[in-house]
Length: 168
Image (cartoon, rainbow, N blue to C red; front, side):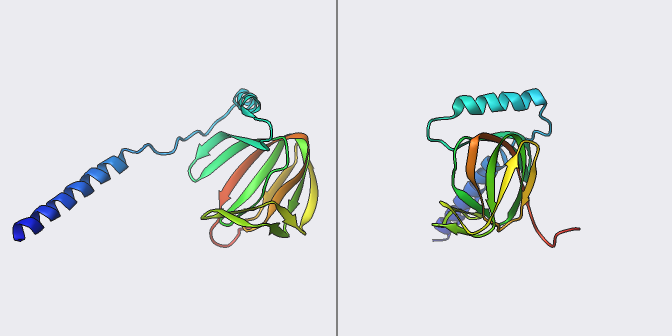
C-alpha cells in the first residue's frame, strides 16, 4: 500500500513539474509600443479588406503593452451596445462620424464574458455626435453604443483597467 501511495505521489509531482514547465514556455502577449502613421494606414487597409457584408466592426491591434491594448476599430454599421465592468474606454475618432450613446440601460442585456455585458441597444442615455478628431472617454460600468454610423467611422479605442479612486 505504501508503495502505491508513494508511486501515486511521485506521478502527481512529475505531472505538476511537466505542467509547470509547459505553462512557463507559453509566449507572453506580444508587446508593441510604437506604430507609425504608415502602420495604422496598413491596419486600416487590412480591416477594410477583411470586412464582410453584414459585419458591423473589424478590429485590428495598434499597440500592446499588457494590460493595455490600443485597437483600430473599422465600423460600417451599428453593432451591439456594451458595458465594460472593470475598464474605462477611450475613443479617438480617426475618420468619419457617428452617434455615440452613453449611460442609460442596456436593452436585452446578456453577459459576454466575466467582465463585459452586451445588449441590442441602450434605453435612455445621452446621444453625442462624434466626428474626426474627437476624443471620448467612457467610464467603467457605463453603457455605450454607436447608435448610428454615418457611412463608416474609424476609431482608436484604448481599454484602461481601473482600480481604486480616480485621480484628479
